[in-house]
Image 1 (cartoon, helix red, strand yellow):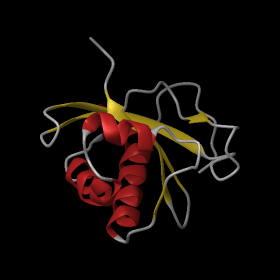
Image 2 (cartoon, rainbow, N blue to C red; image 1 turned 60 degrees about the horizontal axis):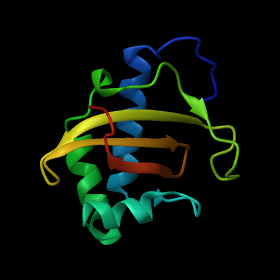
Image 3 (cartoon, rainbow, N blue to C red; image 1 turned 90 degrees about the vertical axis):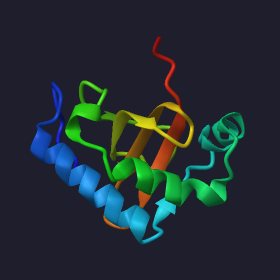
Image 4 (tube, one colour; image 1 turned 135 degrees about the vertical axis):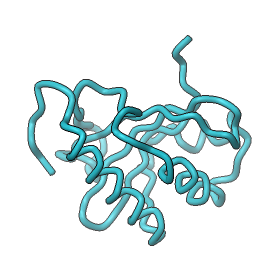
Length: 123
């Protein structure tokens, strides 16, 4: 999807993105860009990258449009693998970590691309 949004995407679009993300995660089609902070943040949250798929599925099983925290999908230009793709920002409580997780991702026809996955910094 490459539509430009001036405001928050409609719930229907977010439901579609969440569903697509969940399908890709379930299929094991997860990519983490090389320059992502996901690896560093995994140390802070004390989990192994090998557990990431299971953790993401736990979150996506209850994720809904109300968890979207961006005003509109942004675009990341410093990584060619997500260049031109919308990046969606969500926050969701995660029982495994007993905190709210902030995460950014993009999806295309073949990959769920996780860009950020960390504790929320909102107070």
